[in-house]
Amino acid sequence: MLIRNAPDLTEAHVTPREAYLDRRRFLIGSAGAALGAALLPAAAAAAPLAGIKSPYSTTDKPSSLSDITTYNNFYEFGTDKADPAAYAGKLTLSPWSVKVDGLVNKPGTFALEDFVKHYAIEERIYRHRCVEAWSMVIPWLGFPLSEVIKRADPQGSAKYVAFETLVRPSEMPGQSAFFPALTWPYVEGLRLDEAMHPLAILATGLYGETLPAQNGAPLRLVVPWKYGFKGIKSIVRISLVEKQPATSWNMENAQEYGFYSNVNPQVDHPRWSQATERRIGAGLFAGRQKTLMFNGYADQVAQLYSGMDLRANF
Image 1 (cartoon, rainbow, N blue to C red):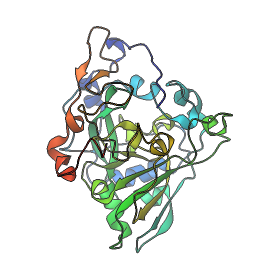
Image 2 (image 1 turned 45 degrees about the vertical axis):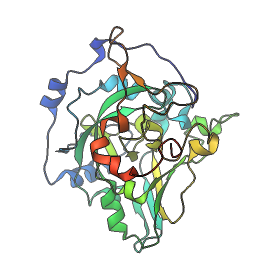
Image 3 (image 1 turned 30 degrees about the vertical axis):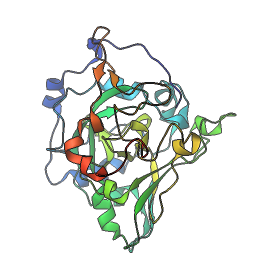
Image 4 (image 1 turned 60 degrees about the vertical axis):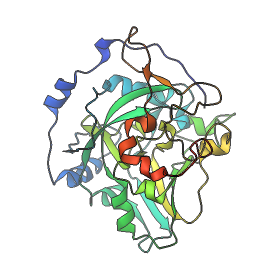
């Protein structure tokens, strides 16, 4: 993965968590319908979105909205961290549809508002760890991926879940670059038991609003115990399959990017250490902090990999 360094932002850029908590509205039980309504108009502009508090949230202080929305990897818009915020505003987000197919008994292609209306939106404040050894804390809004899979009624032979991103070079300049960073569409995958884990969500918003385009609107995957590039953005297709699906960075460089890509401070990237990380927005004198196994979610997910050699299955 290409590395683009940006100067640390100061504490002045950090939204106080208390201020954020004060302005949130939690609409228990009706949040799914609220999201559907929020997505019905032209979805390019952020719309208010509320979520149920989740016990899965960390108590870590969320990174600022400015940091989260201006320091992004989204190579469909360019390889610089600032490119997504600069160019993603041209992406047409409505209408949007999601195809669910493969080894399921209830396949279909669904308008986004029909796809999400079945699910109550939760707020999940998760640690986010990039393979480039920087991190943030992001207050996502979304719903469990497991509920989507159960609704599709998977067949017994389904072993993996494959994801696919939108291809629209006219609006995504990275896809029309003369020397594209990756082969499009961007694809990702999870083992079925990983996808069914309660920590895995499909995000539709952050910081109390619908998801900004540069963060993967209108629908992205969030798996907080894995490196950030596993969180495929702007999803248009979810397929249940029998064999391990191809993933974009693994196809690009299998020696550096494994299928699992679990956060693991004991297994360095071939070109840099994974033992520590730089928290974006922490300030010039904050220093680096130790990276935790599975990004601090080991108690919840370590059993998924019991008996596996995590150096071979990186």
